[in-house]
Amino acid sequence: MNNLENQEKVDAEGVFSKVLRAGRRTYFFDVRETRAGDYYLTITESKKNTQDDGGVFYKKHKIYLYKEDFESFKEILSETTDFVFSQKGQEVISEKHQKDFDAKKEYNFNKTEENNTESFTDIDFDDI
Image: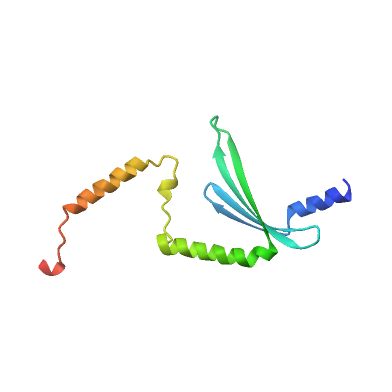
């Protein structure tokens, strides 16, 4: 192996890494070094998938984020996550992400709940 190949291998290993495991997804945050000796960040989403034959494979998506964009990226990420939390709260509605989620069942369940609350009588504890 010549020096160039060796340098590329060192660069591929990165300088600093953090991993976030989130169900079927894993996020890798890797600081890498440019040839000029500066740092940049790669964010990789790896999602576990199953083939029809039962075999497992991972789909990966990668973002390269350079130092000059860090502040703007952080600001916009913070602004957008704050928006989501203010609009929808922090509770995760996970059953809608399940493979067997049936929107029709969810719709019928909600309609049944609505019908049940129509016959509900609101009483005040002072009335008891």
